[in-house]
Amino acid sequence: MTNIAADRPLAAVVLAAGQGTRMKSSLPKVLHPVCGLPMVAWVVRSALASGARRVVVVVGHGREAVEADLRARFGSEVEIAVQSEQRGTGHAVMCGMEPLADFEGDVAILCGDVPLLEKGAIDALLAARRASGAGPVALLTSVLDDPTGYGRILRDAKGHVVGIREHKDASPEERAIKEWNAGVYCVDASFLRASLAKLTPANAQKELYLTDVVAMAGAQGGATGIRWSAESVQGVNDRFQLSEVEAVMRRRIARRLGESGVTIRDAATLYVGADVVVEPDAVLEANVTLRGKTKIGAGARIDVGCVLEDVEVAPGANLKPYTVASQSKVGEAAQVGPFSHLRPDSELGPDVHVGNFVELKKTRMGRGSKANHLAYLGDGLVGEKVNVGAGTIFCNYDGYRKSTTILEDGAFIGSDSHLVAPVRVGKGAYVATGTTVTKDVPDDALAVGRAKQENKLGYASRLKAKLKSAADADKAEKQKK
Image (cartoon, rainbow, N blue to C red; front, side):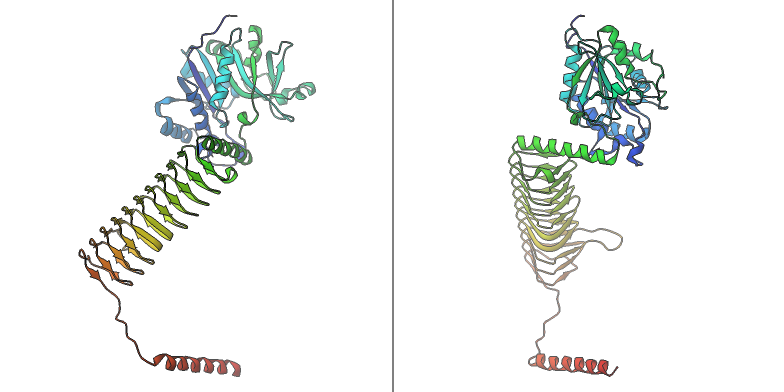
């Protein structure tokens, strides 16, 4: 056999048409997320990372949803083929090869429910396929003590893979084999097309088996089997297996972050999504959840129990325990929490303090401003060095419209104040404690809107006596009954 050019083009066919009945879900199996990314998207990413010039995803069950998701994520990088009738893996690959009718090179055949398959595995498979003297087929295998349900690998005396026997078709001797087929292949495109045309449903399932292509390779020197870790090629058929795969992916992500200079306090309780970015010297404490497009800047600290989704945290910021935030930005050296809630479109400037039980919604706070306790700031524009006292509420909704509250630079809002939007508090203005603000406050003005205090000297003792007498009368009345 001759050497195979290392620069041969690579295409990938991803099988994603199965029904996934054991998932017991209305969501197509391959769209179930692993660390925030659908299983099939993990596989497509790995194929693209390995240099696949064309990626064809074979869809069937839930095809509209799967295609829409892939189009949104990958655009023209992915082509779609439809398997309208489920007639086995061989038939699925036939469907996937239709867009590749004129393709010459190698074809990686991947499963859309094997999200742990990484670029390294595909690269190793491709290298084996292109090695000097290699046959037209290379495949990944693995070893399990109990490979029940998996196709067994049949090798000749030289170690070449000469066949794969599906579990239902295997003899007792073949079922005793521990090495099993991982369902990941790299095949010469011309050989694949010719072999697919020869497939017949002569098996217990009455389906077209892709594994029969391996047996056909025996006439050309056999197939090359590369043993790989069982963990990396684990498929997902039910929700428990999904949880197992996600646990592995979480550890991988935690390891990658730790090796890049991020402090991981407890990898076992850390959840970081596939598209999250964490810069070096950031600290992630236990039970932290980071989802979506969240980005954590260098040196930022995310404390115990924080849940962030699509949040940008600037370098040096400190999110204290149990802060919840979504679609928001936290500025450099800002402090948030504990028990704060940043709802969508909230933006905190540098050195801003947002304390315990403070909720923001669609509100911007400028440099050095503070809302340290028990406040609701909704639809607000807060300038720099503004102090918002405990119990302050931006009354932003009249039952029909949301309106804006504006606090200019240096304003001071006393505790338990209500600001009824739309309203503006000017630069350096002061709102007295307990005031309800219903009209604009000019710059450097004092707004007071509370009832006048009246002191009644000596009245407390008379009031206490009156209350005690009433209580005694109630008690006596109950005793009569």
